[in-house]
Image (cartoon, rainbow, N blue to C red; front, side, top):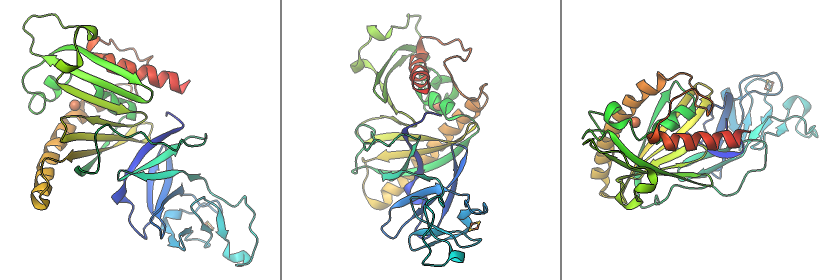
Amino acid sequence: MLKNKWYIVLSSEEIKKNKILKVKLFGEEIIFWRDSNNIVHAIDSRCPHRKADLSLGKIVKDCVQCPYHGFMFNGDGQAVLIPSLGKSAKLNPNFKVKSYRVKEYKNFIFLWYGDENPNDEIIWLDGIDDSFSYSTLKSIWNVNYTRAIENQLDVSHLPFVHRTTIGRGNKTLVNGPIAELDGDVLNVWVCNEVDNDQTPKKSNEINKEQCTGRLQLIFPNYWQNMINDKVRIVAAFVPQDENTTILYVRLYQKFLNAPLLKNLINFIIMSFNKIVLNQDKGVVESQVPKFSDISNKELLVQADSPILLFRKYMHEKMK
Ligand code: FES
Ligand SMILES: [Fe+2]
C-alpha cells in the first residue's frame, strides 16, 4: 500500500458523538472517536496492557477508557490514567498505543498512512465546493483497492459492462484518451465514439475540447467523474486489507436545491449509481490477481493508457 499519503478512510457522519467506531483499515483494527470539541482521533484498537479490545470501552474526558482494567488513552495514544497505580501516579511514557494523524475535510475523514511527518495540505477534487449537496453510498468489494481504482480509469468498458446504463450508445471505439499526471493528480479526457470503420485517433491527434468525458484521480485513493459543472460523481477506495476495498460513492449536485426535491433527486440518482456500481463489482472481482501492478502479465491496449499511467505512478512511489 502506498505510504505517506492522506487517505480518505470514512465518511464524516459515520463517527457519531460519544461513540467509539472500530474500523479495519490497512489490515489493522483502528478505533475512531470525537472529543468534546468535535475533533476526531484514531488509535489502534488493541489495549497495550492485556490486549482487550478498546472499542468495547467508553469515552471519558475526551479519552478512551479500556473496558478491562480502566486504562485511559488520549488522542495521541498516551496512557493518562492507570487506575491500579492511582490517580496521582506519574506514568511511564511507554504506556501508549499507536495513534494516527487524522483530519476531517469536506465531510470525509482523512488518515495519514505512513511513518513520515504528514503534509499539512490535502489536495481536493477540482470544482467541488460547498454549494453542492451530496448523498453517499457504501459498497464492499473483494479486491485490492488498486483494481477498484483502475476500473474507474477504464474508458473502454462502458459499452460492455454498462450496456444497459451509462454505456448505452455503443461507443466502442476509443480515441486517445488523453491522460496527464500532474504531481499526485491524474487527469483523463475521454473521447469515445461509435465504430464506423474509422481508425481510433491517438492522444496527440485529439484535443481536450472535443472530449466528452473527464475523470480525475487524486492519489492515493479518491476520484471524480466530472459530469458537468453541476453534477459530479465522487468515489473513495478505502483499503480494508490487501483483498478488500470499501467504496464510498457520492453524488454531488447543485442543479436542484429545494430541500425535499433535492433529497428525492439525490435518492433516485444514487439508486441508479448503485446499479452501475454493481455492474462493475462483478467483473472487477473476477480479475486475477486481485491487485494491479506494472508487472502483471496483461495485454494492455491504447485505451488503457490511464491505467498504465496509474501503474507507473504506483510503481515509482512504492520503490
Ligand atoms: S487490557 Fe486494557 S486496561 Fe487491561
Ligand atoms: Fe464502470
